[in-house]
Length: 287
Image 1 (cartoon, rainbow, N blue to C red):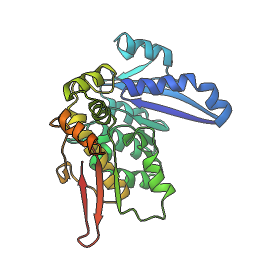
Image 2: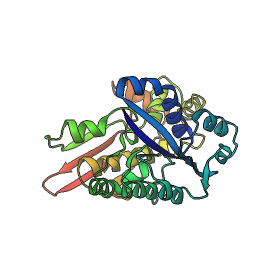
Image 3: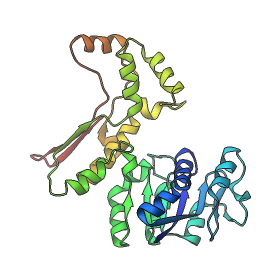
């Protein structure tokens, strides 16, 4: 039986979802994979970092989060105001870093990931910032400490695009990548293809939970840019800066343009692309 001590930093929708899955899949993990996971620490921006050596009770944590009460109300938990300090003081086997994406400097996620790797922890993350701005550095750090760094969820959610290319296609020479990387804009544009205008399609996406109250990151293409940066670094070995990606969002697209494309047998989509130009040894990135 293998036992893992897990730390989750970022206890919003993703972090709570992971904790809930660990609770509901506990028996399956033990019977099917010979694995037990003890959640020993959790952190969020509001309440800081809590740790309990014997493990934290997941239903209690979820109830505290749902009611907006401090996580430190968990019985027997030690608390640090700063997540990084708490992580460095306690450690664990695996760190799940799921704080929000920040494309300016990737903080605080990048510091959490660096600290976890330096302590010999395996790290999984859904935070696009660290991979977009420092993917090559972080994978090198993981290799130095003989641990795994996984960020599959940062590009195309549950679709295993990163591991497929980096591992399943390890012997291939990838020269170009092109595809739809943002589900929100794809939903909006598909809705507009049925005759809705942009504002109506956006409101529908927000009502369905596909778009945030502030949809800027999606509709202006920043989310797709972050994913493109991750692919550039991890697939092509060419770290880029956000300003090196040509970006054009969907906010200026009209219903008439979408319907005209339909009439011509075409579709308007937000496409991310990476193209290696061998003659100039450059990587062209566009969204």
